[in-house]
Length: 206
Image (cartoon, rainbow, N blue to C red; front, top):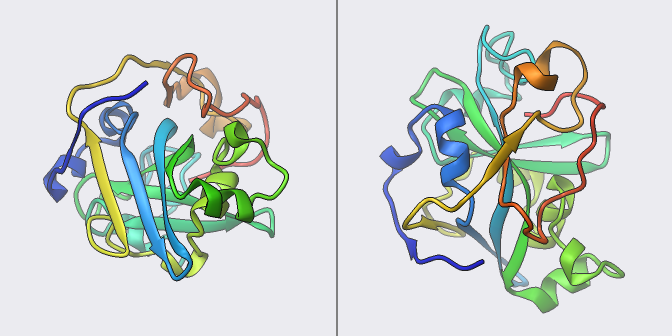
């Protein structure tokens, strides 16, 4: 799948994450590291609301030093460390104070594939960014990049000019009240090779 891409302003991302999630499908996020640029076309995302609304969200119980960026301006990066080994990337959504975000679950490398292959040695091209931790590794985005403006260097973010066809279902890898059929806020492009395998239960994410 390919779509015409356009540059949008911050106000585009300042909306409910459940609305924003499908609009990020087909978007291209790029990161320029010291080693070079890598860009990913997004094919799977998950939406998370915030304080008091979404038990699966890191912001559900309020603001902390870890999640403070979620309470700020839209289109910034909320990066977090999970399972003691993985960095996951989220795009802050909504207006300041709403603590919303969209987790980047999977995509396809569209620029810098040789560098992504080096970082994900042994992985097939399909699997380079097929999963939230793989995506961060392939792009070379460190945890320390959390809080960065995704609309300014070393990042860039462009979106599909027209919404792409998508499907939705329960968020993956979440047990308890924050996941399951009550929160069908995972969005993906059907048939896209960058969509990650579905896992029904694990720990909460964004």
